[in-house]
Amino acid sequence: MTSEWIKLTSQDGEDIHVNLANASTIEVHKKGSRIWFLAGVKDGTIDVSETPEEILEKLSDGKRAHRT
Image (cartoon, rainbow, N blue to C red; front, side, top):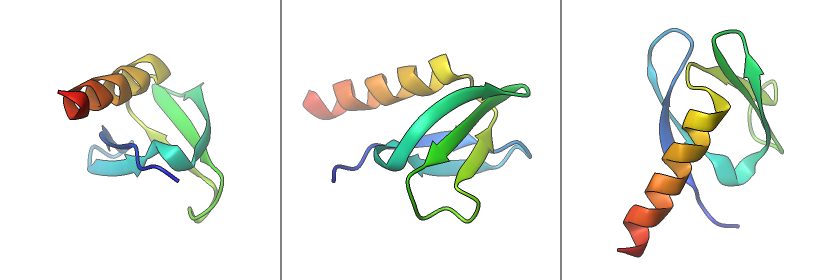
C-alpha cells in the first residue's frame, strides 16, 4: 500500500498528519471534513478543519512535488 501523507488541521487547531492511502471517504462535516478510514483509527474517523476540496488539493500538490 502506498503512503499519501498530508498535514491537516484538527478541529481543535492542532496539526495532524494523515495518510490518505488508508481513507475510504471524505465528506463535508461541520466547518470542515470527516475522513473515514479502512482501519487503524480508534473510531474509524477523524474530523479536520479543511474542506474536502482543500484536502484533495493538498494531496495533488504533494504528489506533484514528489515527481519533480
